Length: 592
Image 1: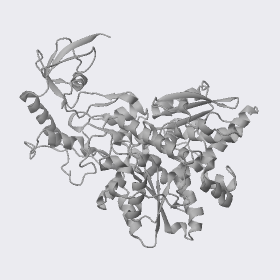
Image 2: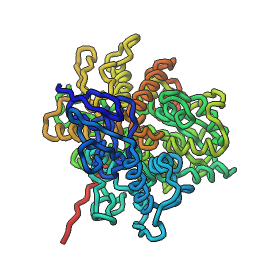
Image 3: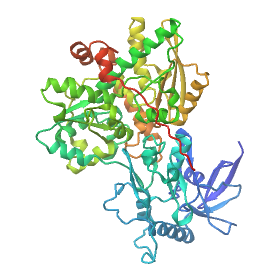
């Protein structure tokens, strides 16, 4: 590849032809501020509209300032990144943005984590000239089950569009209007809940301001814990323990499982359980369903639906219900671990502690914003009482811990309560892409072959970070073709292959978010650094490796649950409490 040589702030640099000024400067340690720019290298998404002009620099021989994020270098180029002209331009740009931005920083959900706020501090902006004359654009606030849109705070960086349209291929967000009235919203400015939105929360994860945030259930949680007549039960997802520490100054990938359990008890939860228990339960149902479909397929049944798709991710489920409703009978009918947990907690466990389901509040702590929506689906309730009352994100939990004046890292190490706190390594790896299908493979292999995996328990061929992965696992002479996708755009490719009859797979795992749950929309913000996701993934596999039991079917509490309460996997009671149906929610908009 041809290289070019240039000078940036008197530093010589040589980079490949086609490199932008921003990337060239970064290579020699020169930090150019950005706002609209976003680059998630490991998943191939780059947003560089060059619209905000915060990254403007001087290029010798060019009359106007150049946006560093969108201007390619050339041989002999001489760039100055912090001249007084550049600094003045940047300040002016940010002052204009702030002049049409709400001044509610003290109560904004993103305060302290807002890139616009950080930029204003960095540039030393203390007043906004002419603010008394500036007109303010106003829009209605849109509340959906998972996401709040406050377009008054939208700065038109269009990062959310890149994630929604290019990476996820959902198409829920697009720019509308021009000039001063421009903003980003669903088609025809409809509310998000009526759009194709899957509530994956990736728009929230990359929004630099408070324009996109999660629905906050922390006040509901405080009310429930404060009620002496309510039994409050927590369940915590595997990806939470690999990311929560980041909110307390720890390096990405620091596991804080025991400290998290301790903090939850001190917040006032009556029982602290592990969603990994329900992940093991999911494997028992999903693995049994997969083996049943495979057996019927091998016996010549032409009506069996293959490949079977995993069903743990609610954003992915909503995606197929909206975009591929003709294929809604292909996913496993097994509920997600969150919903299986709620169902068992309000039946089996409620009976054990002799309380009514109406007097129990089940709270899930999740890395995922779509879980808020999932818990509100009508089919996951009994006479109006939800199996999971509400879901809080990793970020919401961190805020609550700080509000209670706890330092997470000072908490003692404690274990989950029993029986629904016992879990295996297979349950842990649900938190990363490839983990669900690997967990299912561990159990399905032994159930099918009657053998023991022993030292061959790690299916390395199912691991990785590529958007689409393929592997074949030998089930004692029977080759099983497995597909894995993270990101709904990658899922779309696999679904279109199934629809066209070109799919070679027997089973496919799909996760909506980059890296799986570790990259969920409710996790600590990664600020466009995908190495953080890889560190969380490494932590998940480390916890799996250190578990004394690593196969779901060997979880003794799961075995007891079937013996005492459920009967057999895929049996009548299990089907009633642990399985679900999918629906056609596609909509046609007709303009007369």
